[in-house]
Length: 92
Image 1: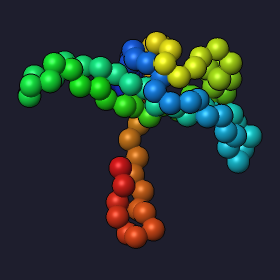
Image 2: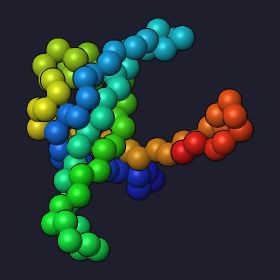
Image 3: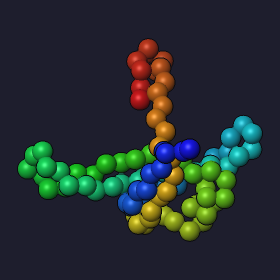
Image 4: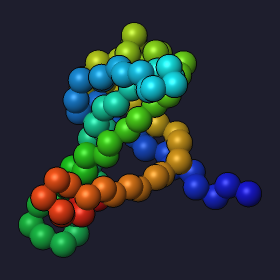
């Protein structure tokens, strides 16, 4: 049973960049800006920027019909990753 489901609504915060994997699968990358209430300091709202990757037909559809600034909803799963940079730091 897959319990990893995320629904996000926000504005596209960066240009949608199309790429192709080594296996020939098309994918699109962009950043989604999501505003939320902030109860911890004087600001009323805070914006989070979430990295999004869409594959195959979803990627093609996004690149054809959406642009930076458009309001969209994204349904998918959440995945975190990390890597070691050239200077040895762990980047999340």
